[in-house]
Image (cartoon, rainbow, N blue to C red):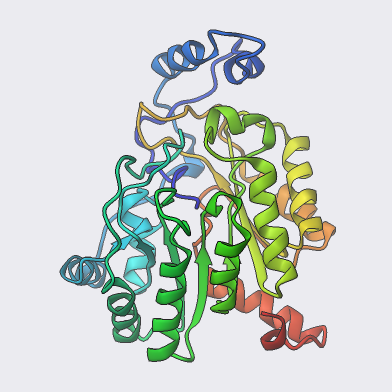
Length: 340
């Protein structure tokens, strides 16, 4: 899940000349790499480029939505991950629901969601989510979760229950699920896929070289396999990347190629923003024109829909993103309902 990389300019920093990214992220080449990262993060300034300025005021509609979510004991990744788009989405009456609690069993260095010992699953949550989707008259909804490595199926059955509850109450509502890797379990992934969401999203987040520093409990090949298996089961597959973590452009393009050949046709790319001084530092603020270049490159590879700009997050404008994808397939003569 693109839970992190979503800070709102809190403790924002800029690249420090002379810092070796290889040394800062490769413990084999530098046993003090972790210390270098911490030292780097303490000495960075709070400079933020102009293109990353965004007003975060909540209007009355947004406030009412937040109140409703609290009354129903529901969480959103919008709030838990400090998403910079939450005011805009809440004002439109939309949100990405975060299921299975607000405590993650992993501790990714980019993520704003708290980690620790998770609580037992709430069996009433699927129906409460469905009730809120119905009340809001949502045409499209995104369901994501914390990672629950403590559960035998990683929470796949709970995902399926939420999907089915929404389908039962709101049969015309499109559903995107943004799932964890389920520790590579094919059985768990099949449970979610059999529930037939319109889109299955699993974020690679960053380039393989940075996984050890950014996502130490995840594996690049395992995440890529999630996309490949879901695509083979006939689902529209989507993935997201953060940039500004110290990756090189050629590495980003290699990941895009890996995703395309795995079967993904929906792609999001956004700027990583550090949630707090305790999190992985920002190594670069990628300029808007570089995001445009990434988008054009991905489209030239054959991706159907690409959202690439500084404030893009994997769930942002998900309905419009999917609608554009579906229309594209309709123009090419594909029956999207049979594919997804």
